[in-house]
Image 1 (spheres, rainbow, N blue to C red):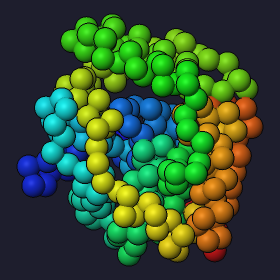
Image 2 (tube, rainbow, N blue to C red):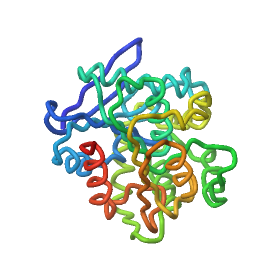
Image 3 (cartoon, one colour):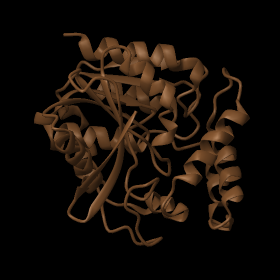
Length: 279
């Protein structure tokens, strides 16, 4: 694993890479209010071992990347999509496979339309184009996140506990919830954060609408991976996304929630790897 800070226009994006840089590149984009640690190191190494150069990174307002005043993010979803291209430029990569989860999957769709020439293939995990006819998130998720304002974001243990509770809410019924593992990841996230509270800026971002209504215009090969018990972006979103993108392949994860659970790693890694090398 190698850390590399990408700096442009006063912005700093913290990245880490795995594997041989001569191999085809895979850029991993994490979801909202989550740093790169949730693309776990072992997951990244195992994906790299399949013959890929894997890059994970902290989006703006999480981890060691640039943060903004709470409630006043000075950027849009389009800017976040452009950040991914700045990362590729920083590594000297002309084209890459893009893998995004949740908000990261939304950004991946924008990238595929906005920077088509830089994208080889895309994988969309637990995400959506958020068409208005699709079902909303489950009430238990709304209720849990409505308490975020009561969290003392200067108290690291409170933030860790909130994070552990979040992932417990988002899990499916198939896999056991490994509380110690999630706690340790949440603790790692807290320990490598420039400003914990700023992650909440992801909830007030604007932009992206002009691209998400054009999902059917995406013309790079797409793999859609979605848990059948996702409580925040219901499985129907994944089905609709796979139908909307021409030629897209849908891989359901039975009983999985809004998560990249270790028990699904082999399935996900194999699917991504096969997708990137297929013609």
